[in-house]
Image 1 (cartoon, rainbow, N blue to C red):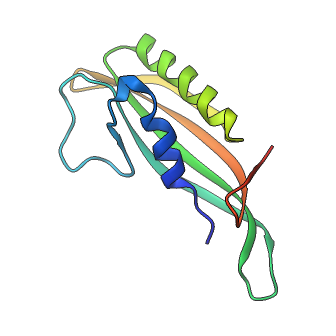
Image 2 (image 1 turned 90 degrees about the horizontal axis):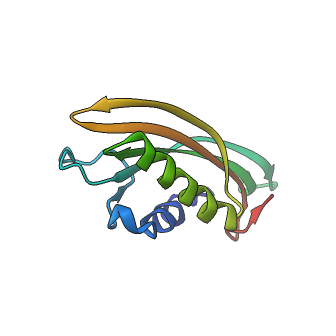
Amino acid sequence: MIDIIDQMVEIAQSVEIFENRVYRAYPAVYDNDGRPYAVLNPVGRNPILIDERGSEIATTLMYSVDIYADSPVTIDEILRRLTDLYNRKGIQCTGYGPSYQSTNEMYCATANFSATVDVRGGTYR
């Protein structure tokens, strides 16, 4: 099965404001200290090329990124940076829900990203 969530997390961790606070699932301890962080989750997969054994050769993968920060402006700035970094790797932002829901003095918005990936990990635009 093709998956790039580890690369997605690694790329997001390079956004300095997160200070490596990027998680694959909701953190075990609630982060409510006001510092920005992100939570990545796989939300879909669509195999587009499968060999005769049923193994994936190329798949379109979709991920959601929940961005938490102290203000909507900070979330927008983080999204711009993430989109730029992901675009360089052939991963496109396919949706953004800037509802800025406030939870425990933190704001949250969700962005969706998609990439078509082959079995070697290469992405296609």
